[in-house]
Image 1 (cartoon, rainbow, N blue to C red):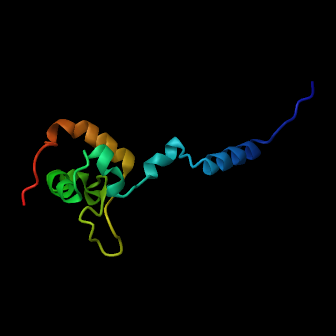
Image 2: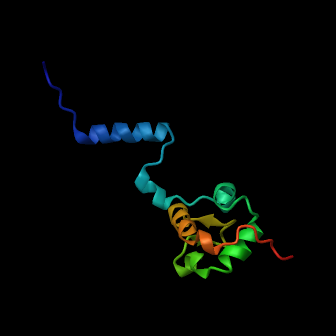
Image 3: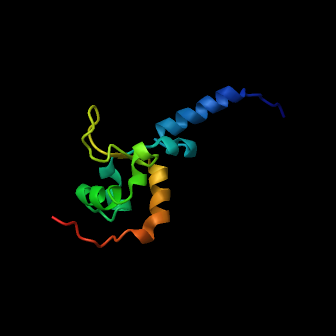
Length: 111
């Protein structure tokens, strides 16, 4: 039986091409994944509105703000040159899991 040697770089290139074609995200790339707040509201914030999240999460927990080392980028949605609020996905999930008991998910937003 003959053996064929395939260089590692050709294998890596083929795997990366398949990952790209299947629209898969390698695990290490999730740290850079920053979806818009609207994309994660339903699954991670009990489908609360952006004002609810801004007032009852971002304002109460300033450590969530990117400028303070947190995971919420442009939390007001009004920074010059940037439209909307984005989240550092992995960091957001970890923070929400750690602080779930501190958040009153049923609190009404004061008008």
